[in-house]
Image (tube, rainbow, N blue to C red; front, side, top):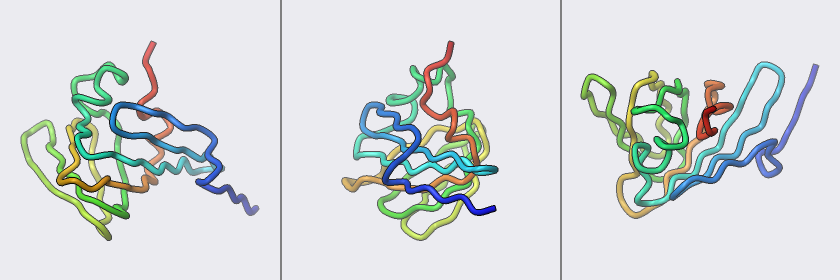
Length: 119
């Protein structure tokens, strides 16, 4: 089996304050391309959409551009930038660092539900 889709023609696009997400669904893979503009912070831009205090999505990510800082539920902080590959467990906040948009790809599958209104 071969299945090909272009992120330039996503199956779904979700806009939220200071950013947006494009998602393509393939057999066995939900792929997301997220663009977070300067000033984006999960607790300010997505929290009300998700209906949770912290992001409860698991991320397997690759940063293409910009920088993002992440804080886990236990207070540990990390920062990622271009070329970084990361795994981030549910229960975190995150925000753009600096004045450049942060663009990242996510392969974990959780982006299928990211920034979708609950209820």
